[in-house]
Amino acid sequence: MPLPRVGAGLAASQLPCPLSSLPPAPPATTSLPSSHTQPLLSLLPQAMAATEFLIRVLLGTIWYPQKVGDELDEATRERMQQRAQLLSLEMSRLLQELEQSRQEPNSQEPSSVAWGALLFAALQQWQFRAITGVLVLLFGLWWWLSRRSREQDGSSDEESSSSDREQVEEAQEEEEGNDDADDLGRFFEEHIQWPVQDLATECQLVKDLMDNLVLVFQMLLSNSLMPVLQAAIGVGSTFEGWSPREKDITYRLLVPLKPPRGHAFHLELCTDEEMPVRCFCIRVELVCTCMTEQLAGEMLCLLHHPEEELRRNQDPSLLDTLCTGSYLDVQKTARWLHLLVKGAWVVLPQSSRCHLMMLPPSRSCKFQVTKDYSKKHTIEMMFGVQQGDSDIFLSSQSTEAIFTPSTIWSESYAVAEMKFFRHIARQVPRDSFHLRCLQLCARAMVGTGFSTYTLKTAVMHLLTTIPLSGWRRRDFLLRLQDIMRYLRCCLEEKCLDHFFFGNENMPQEIVLPPALQAAEPPNLFQHLAQDPAAHAEALHDFYELRDRLTRLLIYGN
Image 1: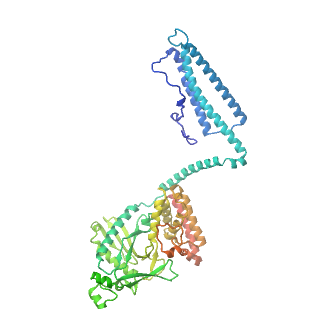
Image 2: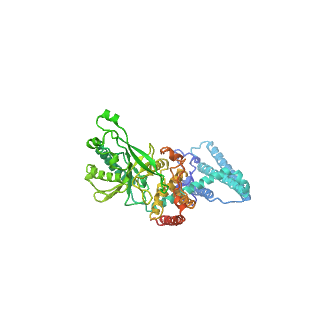
Image 3: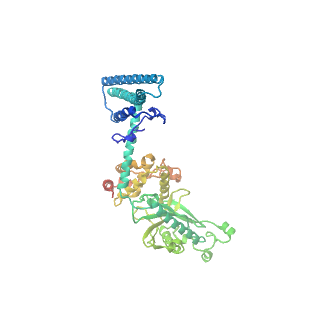
């Protein structure tokens, strides 16, 4: 039976009882004269009380062990041994008298003395075994305490000879500490007012809507020379499960674009060093389809047929509609998708119970869907071109530059980031708090000069360096401390490496272009190294972030 913690109460029913040491019960047909048994039966409660007292003393000694001197322990041990010998001799004498009374002739029932001896012998046997067990335990406890006392006196020898015992004690202390830490983590989980949201359900509703939209787009554009739209991919904090907002959530989806027939996309890296991320231009080139034209008999080759014939018999090419010069234009593509969503909405099953409101297009297509005139979903449909077969896209999303030309496409890692968090979700323990840490820090960052992408990059680095078993609820405060310490260190050194460049800890399921795998990681804090005023402001924002996070932990909101 495991012992309760120190200070825990113990009911009488929980006391350990040596049932195996009890003598077998007398046969059901045996009956004792009441005049003979009454005095002896009256002793039973006293004997049981004495035994219970000894057991309680034993448990108290185990829970609250006290150091005793060697001389006192030796005297106590000798008295115990003498008492055990006297009890043994007394029981042997009584059993001998009982045997003699049985051998007397013409005795039809045992005398009162015999019955008393029998009951007393049984009682003494039970008490003897119980007391003997208690004495053995006390003797073992005394031996253990005396050994421990000698080991504590020679503390220098203890370090080399008792390593196993220390490891057991440390394991027990660590287990108790984990219980306390888990209680603390549970307290913060219930104390902090987290955003009320069901991201998984809402994201699935938005994804279903976008899947229906893309199917309609593909049907409408099947015989056109416009870009071919692929299935939408949910990206960003909402689809990753850590959105810091409770209301006005924006659901971002990336729609990959494929070149239409007779066209090809060529990606050209820009050399503008002022851009915070790598940027590209997408050059659109016409390709020969003469062989396909002969086989299908329907399509004219855009490269070799006269312009008059093409203008008369075929739709305008992509170069004539969505390009500026020879390059695919982001803003023209966004306006085209804006019109496409408005035209396709009427045939969607959701149109009967939802209201659509289009928002002004810029470098993406935004719209709001309101269900039953109450619940509103803001959807941002970005679009991009995939780099080979990798998870890296050239996206229409805005850059941090003051002005971005409409033919510039920024390199987006949103799909790779989504796959990274999906990979982590399959590896972490069930009560992992890595998303809660990210959500709380992002919530505290709102209104400061820090971007959530900076925070996400820092957390992704920590998720690949700290074992995933260390992100459980009980480690909540430790991981928050690690995140803030990592951010401060990066600010002081003015260096935060991009996560997807030259990272040896990248999960294998994330497919990166070979150039990214071997490249030196860009410094996301490069602007701080070049501008002392910006660096001082960033440090000020960090201390403000730390204070906000402290208030969130204390007050819960």
